[in-house]
Length: 267
Image 1 (cartoon, helix red, strand yellow):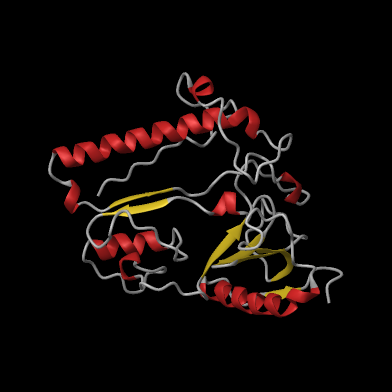
Image 2 (cartoon, rainbow, N blue to C red; image 1 turned 180 degrees about the horizontal axis):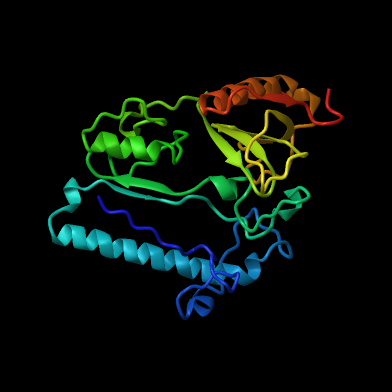
């Protein structure tokens, strides 16, 4: 088993910026902005060329790994997993931080943060086929153990080799948020539902037993997540369903029983 972790495209350096290979700013200066980003908000206009340079270098080096596996005759019998731990909002979501919290590019429930690449090829998988199932990084360890032929019983997550052909419309991924605000969220096939505890210090405290509804997005009708439906009385029944599902997801994650109240001004 070989695990390769690339620091970039993080900007975990003492320059507080993305640093792509030499020439990145010139090569990618004419990039097309993702539609969720707004000019003048965040630092993406300055940072994106270097960010794309980092991503391009990462892809190229993965290509080198694949080429060497093929050269040695190992590719067809190798399980190759390519993924990331989070996305990036380029400091465009800092308004969500509570007092005492901070964020740089990843600590929230928005699609640009949580919707990450995941590509898998090798024994047990059919490369080149898109998958619309809701999956999580929690599924990766069990998937690897299953691929190795070991007993994965008792592990959290799912073995992705066993995903059914049809998508379960009721499936969801549980999300924990910290440092910007202490929150929990569910991403279902259609909706993103997020709660938080505004009274907690999100840097020093990792959990709560009492949360308040904060966001509800319909990712089909509103893929850019511009319209928060958590205050809309027409979605009261949906919020109740998601609230119960989130409480159950927290319990399944070992967080015990939590309560969730409606946002102030919502009946």
